[in-house]
Image 1: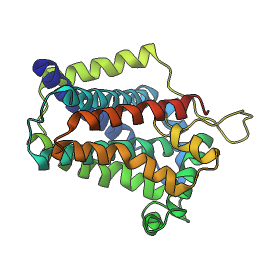
Image 2: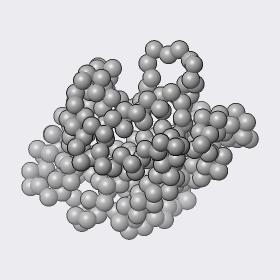
Image 3: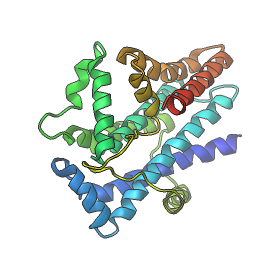
Image 4: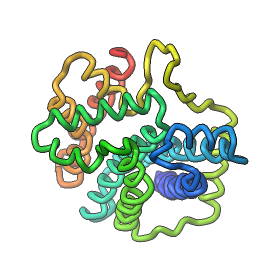
Length: 270
């Protein structure tokens, strides 16, 4: 278990760098004022643009999956072997990864991205106190501008700091970065990236990021935004409490039940 946990943790760091490097390559071709046109240019006109866009997508998807595995392995241990601040920074980092991936989904600027952005705006706007942060993300002049700034600048910097405070380094060994790139390229050939849905197309359903579908389904079932937001923060609260609690098995059970409930909401209530 210790060796597996160490491998997974360093692999997640490798995938983080793979995602950042591939994103850095395509960011110079992206313009928030011409978001959809930029995405289409990257995909169809820019040499190797589609390859690096897919590499960015699959390295990010692999990053969050390996990160979930890392958290799961840590929960299987009998005790937490790191300090409280390091543990809390890891939970902060996990939340930032989710927001970072969501902002990236919005930046693809197709119909599904626009729908997901509007759902997130409604979640924030209809929740007391939380609605005060809406101007940080919503721009009435250039719709994607603030998502773009958060995605390429603030979120990566804050996430990098959280990772550093968690493991006391941002140095990734060459073998882990190589494995991360290999996994990403292999995923690129095996799996299909969701296609962009252009305005005017007739589609039955617009899909959200897989980790956001549960929240969207609850809203479609007329649950209040306050309830949905409270439901979404439960795992983060439980993970923070896990470090300090003497009844860790109870928190593990609650996390497992929440996870099952969210899968049910995401899949069955679709």
